[in-house]
Image (cartoon, rainbow, N blue to C red; front, top):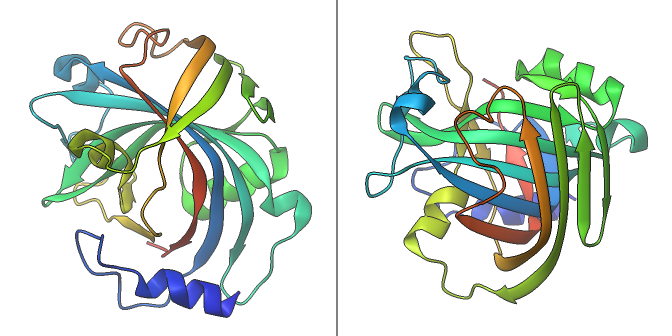
Length: 236
């Protein structure tokens, strides 16, 4: 594991800024990742994001993404993963922001499969984790929460050997922000570049009670699949 993390930490040519000088705090793997991307109106998106953060855009367009994956092997530095606590399915709804010209993501919703990891994640990260029922197979993913429902059936298509500008803009993000502060501090993350594949959606039903008014979740503008990345992260 140590050699593997050293390999991740020394692969930095793709990053837009240097990794932190401090020692990393978290290790985790994001596996079998489904990305569904939607364009949204700036005015409607602005209502959902703290004004301490600037909305990020590409070629004048603003985006929200549903990201469904399996979290694996999560543990802190100098500890080891525990099966029940370290492995669970997760779905987040995120948008794209920046602060002091550093681009990152801001989570509108995070839902996780297991109750205890959800509580621990809330406590340690301060991110808006909620517990939901989640199941997945090799070509399907389903979630049932108090205010959300997701059913996806898909096929993985060809690999994107030359990702476009927007493919990279939507996926290659190396920090996240929490809201509410006048001067938000980025939570830094690092991993090797995403290995992206096209995704053929066979059926799709997504309902977010809080966000249906601003996004037509039935019709993503772009979709990606990735086998996943191994991630190191730093505490705030």
